Amino acid sequence: MTDLTPLLRSVFGFDAFRPGQEEIVSAIEAGRDVLAIMPTGGGKSLCFQLPALAREGVTVVVSPLIALMRDQVAGLREAGVEAGALTSANAPEENERIFDAIDRGTLKLLYLAPERLSSSRALLARLNVSLLAVDEAHCVSQWGHDFRPDYLKIGDLRRSLGDVQTAAFTATADEETREEIAAKLFDAAPETFLRGFDRPNLFLAFEPKTRPRQQLMDFVLPRRGRSGIVYAGSRNKTEVLAQALRDAGMPSLAYHAGLDGPVRAEVQDRFDREDGMVICATVAFGMGVDKPDIRFVAHADLPKSVESYYQEIGRAGRDGAPADTLTLFGAEDIKLRRMQIDESPAPEERRRADHQRLNALLSLAEAPGCRRQTLLAYFGEARPEPCGNCDLCRNPPVLFDATEAAQKALSAIYRTGESFGAEHIINVLIGKTDARGERLGHDQLAVYGLGRDMDKGTWRGVLRQLLALGMAAVDGRTGGWRLTEEARPVLRGETRLQLRKDAMAPRGAGRPDGR
Ligand code: ADP
Ligand code: ZN
Image (cartoon, rainbow, N blue to C red):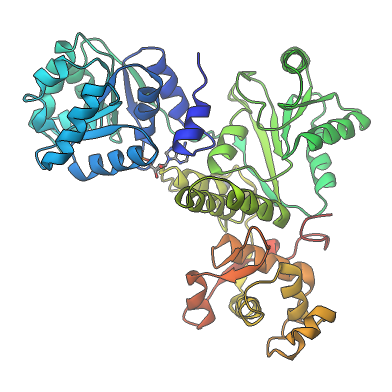
């Protein structure tokens, strides 16, 4: 089957599928009728938009809300995809644009308000409709709150289009509604996707890098005899780590896109066949890995986003038996990622979104409570109880009132002109000058030396959490720190701030990049 990840990247700017999306997209790609239940905000629209782009013909999307349709059409057009919505509220120019695209054969997605179903029959009959997508499919349920009588016509439409392949989506998970959707929209039972995103057998853990190589070895070496993956940020690093593991007597191979095809196939093959093989890989390792008994996944460097994180740790424990994951992160990783985003040729808006996604990942890394709750909440799945199977449930972080410390750090960033790196800011806080600091008069600032009561490692922890909380931001190019809007209430003393004690005093006081 064709890999749609490149399309995911180039058109939508996403680096990985969200949980559930890939399975649903694959089923649609394979030509099956689908009913998918996904929480709100989980990313349903991508599940029909991506297959729509990958195939010939037009995908017709029935959706109950004009505002929702307009949003999606605008988003698709911005991404360079020809899409349109036929609603009763359309301006004539809008209709013209759509008919024009139909005539030229460029239209990929046609959104249809339910009340337009009957009147659009003739139009649809002359289109090559290759997929029918039904958004908010629970609107077909007569017993639900959102019943839309026009939705009952969708089944007829499907038949009139020659039993065109149909994919229905909803966030409503109860069984009655599901059965009603299946009965009213389909003639034969669709393949149904109803799976929580949780992978309860995976132990989740993050650690700030203090002695990264040692931390990695401490995680991997005791797992001798089990299969695992270590993800690293660069090709060179995968080679170095694989060598280090072999030196420690662990069977290990590197895998990255720079290796020849036959070498990669050989690595993959040995991973499948040999027990206890550890692959040190870039993200290139993943597609086609379906080994069920991978017992651990480690990230030697911060993944790209929460989506990538979830996808990569998700390769462990497919058999349902317990599997361990550990993700290391350091200030250097964060800086590098920011720089990569800032320097990418992507449009401004997409880069902003990438920064936000990185912030979401950092909040997960520095979460004050259950890791799994934080992760699932990001995907729209609420979970009332802490999981008991993550590092934070096992060792709850100690929170303490860090308002004063945060105020000092934020004001040091501000008073030095919002353009210096973490080391310089910390030096000002602990009252240590160098020639440059003196030249700039930073030793004359009121905040100079105000933070002598804490050591450098602790201050790094404060800065990292302020960054994770979005109160400070780092310029990817210069590494200079600045304040954000979020910092104001704390600086003004309007709110108090709880930070994690452990994240403030990392074991060992290495440099922020962990070397
Ligand atoms: P819903 O399931 O509520 O219809 P949407 O389709 O509107 O959700 O998606 C919710 C949000 O998730 C959108 O902002 C969308 O851009 C984002 N999103 C969807 N898929 C991905 C992905 N694979 N990676 C990152 N963000 C995604
Ligand atoms: Zn937990």
